[in-house]
Length: 261
Image 1 (cartoon, rainbow, N blue to C red):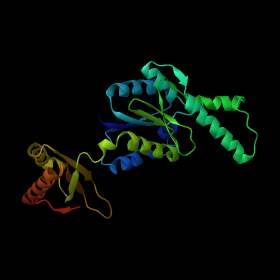
Image 2 (image 1 turned 90 degrees about the horizontal axis):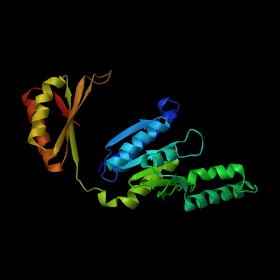
Image 3 (image 1 turned 90 degrees about the vertical axis):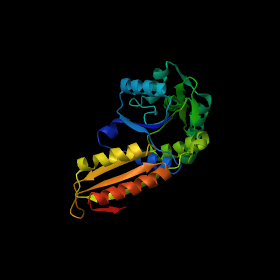
């Protein structure tokens, strides 16, 4: 079971807004000893959202989906999730009550009389229409909940709402996964080296240490840094330490200039 992230919104793909979810979700997971397995960005295309969710529902991963659960014409995620599972959209009773409570609260804050039967307020209740069988994901910001379907969790695109909702899901449903697999990472900067010349070493390390992954991040350098490769190993701590020792020894034998980072 991997952890995936789906970020939905034309505004992200057009560049009108810069995505903040990816880096934050990586941070939230990392603080709990978890890591992101995959991420996808989608526009406000109902067919594509439905097809993506149909695939991810079948995959069994833990999936966080941000965006598109409002009640405006460009919000398609609630319907797409229902279509992906072949279920009808139904009004969630507690979700409806939460929205009505929020409407009354906003009216009290502004001193306005609230008519829950007005067309505007009835339309707001669409945000409580989820695929049949959905459970609520509480929203501490304004109490207008997201929803869960199996191991898929849907929340608004607003970071101030989505991030605490993701934390709630992790801490409520998955604490048994936290820090379950110890991991370590060590790396060097190898200067003026050709990545192709170091590839045999990388292959040998992964063969010798099966619980370790090798990574290589080349850089052409800039005004303050020479051309280099960030070369490292990550994985099970004991094997990572042993692999790193071999890595450093082999770089020295190959007369590659490097520094540990």
